[in-house]
Image (cartoon, rainbow, N blue to C red; front, top):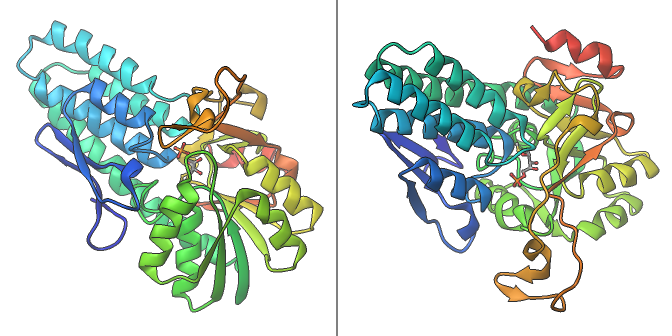
Length: 348
Ligand code: MRU
């Protein structure tokens, strides 16, 4: 079970039904919805009700298991055709987070090998639970590895949301922050609000506040000022996809943060599970970047905030060049340049 703390569930799967915490309602409301069909899950993923690269993978696996359970009375041929189409539909929900294709790939293999729909549904349910539990373990390991890098007293800038709301466990970048806090390090987190969907102010501030971790909300443009004032010792973010050479796609604005950190001589770290590494992509240029509808930035909460008819460009992610990344914190250790060699070592 994914929990943002001991009482809040983020995803709950039971007998063909996937219940999820609708993150678009946070922090004002803790609202649960049910994804009854693959299309309902795709809709939840596209409107960022379920989001964060590792969590997207976990949710996809549960969604495929749910579809299989609900179709398990079909004959074998119809079941297989239907399930492969479900895998394609869910796998195509968002293009950038490699965890989605990774999880769907595992499920697709099971469907291809299926000889009995009901047994296949059970295998998919077990696989989804395993992907979920594995991610929780990975988060815990990333937290412990990354905490080593945090000085005894530190100002930390983070971006977007990389906590329990974004993963199957406690989080990646936020997992490192939590582990450092647990070890008694005196940390203060500067949370960038993360335009345009405000995952920083709505979600990360919510998680940190519930955990009692000292944090200050800043606008995205304030991060460079915090650095210049000497209040930040490091920057740590998550990743949606890491290419073999270390170029990393993450929430739009991460690149600007890395450039500012470089200018101020502040280390910039990425925290991500090995499942976020795309061993097929040799560099960031090969990472597909999701382009969001113009309304993401011409409207806010359904209210128009730009003149009618303006041209708008709203990529959901950007790619930070490897040269700006001091280290990638994974569950298997802290990976440093040259990434072409060191990341390849994780492939097995
Ligand atoms: O569009 P989102 O909210 O899914 O984007 C999330 C991010 O960019 C996170 O930083 C990334 O997925 C890492 S989550 C551990």
